[in-house]
Image (cartoon, rainbow, N blue to C red; front, side):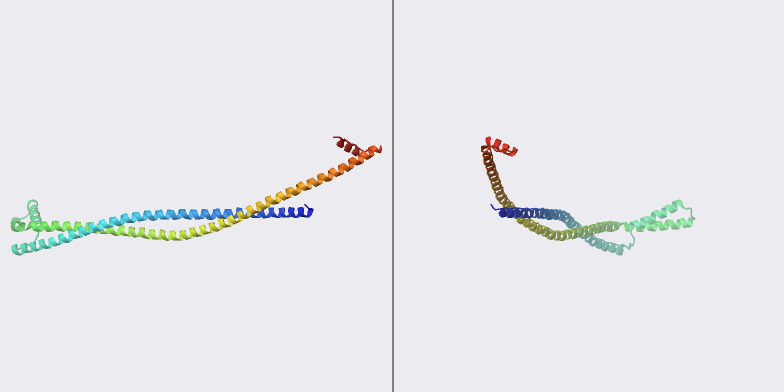
Length: 294
């Protein structure tokens, strides 16, 4: 191999090493980007899974609330129906009371009359008063007792009306409480629904980001694969070039040894000639002569 060829090979070797070094640097950079995009994609995927779980939880809570609302509405409707039935019943009792009042001329609740009697009797027993005033008070008590006896005939009607009125008020209160509970649960359910919608929108946005991160990851991976293939090709080329240079070095070594052998042979011949001619030998000549004797 000519020296010019060797020089060209060494120049190509240096250039090839520079190219390999540059590709390796690019590979390290792209590998970092690739890993970064993949991690970004995985982090977003975790966020999406978290939002999906939150949606599931909110849906379960919302569905539970809606079931309770449904049950509450059934209870409220039942209470309202009971109120209407009791109101209808009171109307009948009021009609019965009116008939009794018209028939007997009673206009007061017997219990009210009884309260008046008790109050007057207490005053009669505990209060000092003149004979005329005491007589007048006893006369009033007698008249009220007569009125009370007549009113007792329809006292059951008043009792029923009073009892039904209390039942109606109680049922109304329960219905109102149930209605408020329905409203509160309906608001809470609506809040859950709006939260679900908000999380769904977040998921849509996160999916876009996830797709973008994955797209960049694929691009980086494709670029990484391309550079890695280039590196493999360059390393293969470097191996072949080193083989050629190794052969060239071996050839140079052989040529150098051949020249050294020729020079040594020429010197040995020269020493032999000096010995034959009985010429003086130098130290170098003696060394060469000793070497040839081995």
